[in-house]
Length: 272
Length: 280
Image 1 (cartoon, chains in turn red, orange):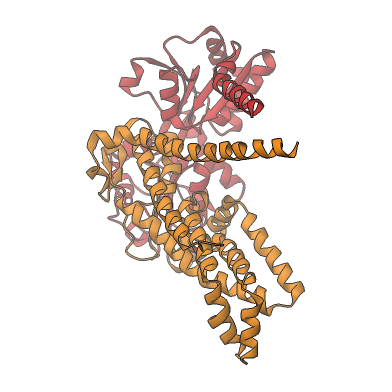
Image 2: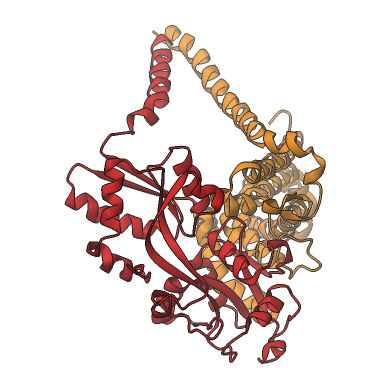
């Protein structure tokens, strides 16, 4: 009995001190956007290889978490896949490492080649419910939207000028992959996802097609030239000026040394 | 030596049981504490509405609550008769080798992770249903996938209950010259009804709490479904979809969904406990 109690007490004590134990000095904690995280992970690996003894820990949880964690010091660097809002920019500093575009996707078998902004709004608010209303075949439209809090949704709403309560979706999804699978499996579906992820899916034979926005083709090239209307920056954000180690990491992430990593993820290096 | 070991055993098991109870109480307390900002801020009434747009200040949970119950009910309506039929077949009608294989298959099905069912549902079932009743991801599809998931639970527990029916009852039925149909439906099933009902309630609880599979096939639109082919969002999916991205009142609102779900499942567990035989 006594031994058991001692054991339990020790266990509790160890558990209580675990969080303190993992805050090592040469460790960087990055949390936030699930769009930026895979890129940050790759950059982190290369940074670790170049700086022995340094550990880079990347966790996902969305841009909102990236902002919150950077704000209250839970992370050294927040990962945020959008521009900072004015109120956030008062305390946080954004360091852009890449650009990403958000494009509308439809099933590859859908003959509709383009939609103007008014049609996009009408489809997403439920005023056009059939592809006939947008120059397509007689087939009901399945509107795919994203869950609240996702930066892709915020970007899309900002572009269309809609509020989320005006959107009439038939499916609400979480990440890009779920969106691509949902559209690929439904000839009448329309959704919006990251251009990088969509191009990758198209190259691997997934039956979807990217629609142009405002007459600009949805390609990583158009994003790079700054011509694509639905473009977002992928940011590393810090609370004020970064710590020396974090500053080195940010400089590394913005250097040509990681250009191939950015392109491998279908993102676009920002114009210098 | 034996005596001292016995003296240790009772307090040890008591401590373990106490720890389990404490964990549950702690979890409920945590849920309550995390939901408190939302509950205290706008009161209970704001959670009664149908509209869920947390970033615009609408926190209605009614549509999701109804959707959760509807999906679970559909799943259990499909799985209960099917599971009972499977159990009757395996217990009374299948040749012994086939029955053992069939039970193994059910046990295997029970062990498949829910995300696998969900992935299969998203890539196979949803497109199939979409061709027939677009958009495909719907209350119906979710109920179907859930029914498949809880079928082994219902069938295995019903089988165990049927196996516990006293031999004398079955022999008596045989001696009376009853047909097999009468023996099974009028003697075996009524004698095993508590165990069967327990399995059904356990399946229902699992259906209420399932997250990943439903998230992938239900469509996740917050609305009152007008038909079974409308997409719906259940409480668990709501938490999984938005928790990673939620802060402040939005986050607290999600904890209220969790609290509501915990209360639903606790109510069900209480009901199931009342069904258990007192002197089993």
